[in-house]
Length: 263
Image (cartoon, rainbow, N blue to C red):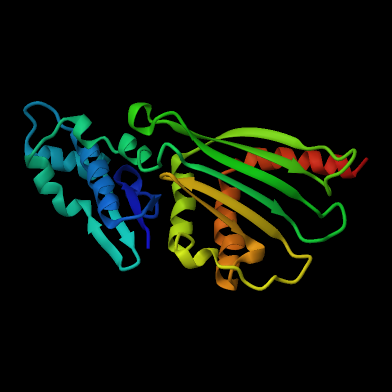
């Protein structure tokens, strides 16, 4: 199962103990711990000043720093604050605790995802179909790369006179890693995941998802997956893919759809 790092911003902690940031998508415990350690240590090193006493640095971090913990299927497995005294007494250069570039590099340069989704067989104006694509751009090792996305959206059953609207957007790396982690946790990368199942009843929503990662490509169709995987694909996985599309894009597409059906 995958791991998540929870970041506690101590500057806001006094006023809002629930003010925490979730960083998902670590497929190994060691990767998650490395990120948590780097991020916590970075927040400490940014507060370090020449001639500063350990007590003064500790007090500054307790007020302004970031404290990270790692959560996995077995619960909390690491708290960076447990190493605080070691961090205080053993300074390192900022580049040695770069967590942003390190996290970006967790998503391979060949990452590409495409999914085609259609709602069930329903009459207009309730029918929707769209294709979402996400792709890594640039080199994560050299320049941090990035993830670009686009969506092609039809407001009705495709055919003559039915428009296809296209929107592009940027995607935070964490959203792409979140999707990969859900597929990993759901068992989609196992050899058994591609085994065909009985055809579901006609008329339901359908999804075809293709993922390229580290030189391998997987393809999943909701109509040919065993029931647990089909439900996971249409549920958690598709929700994460939709969540990678900014809300402003969905709002634009919905407004266009309403205008189209109001003609």
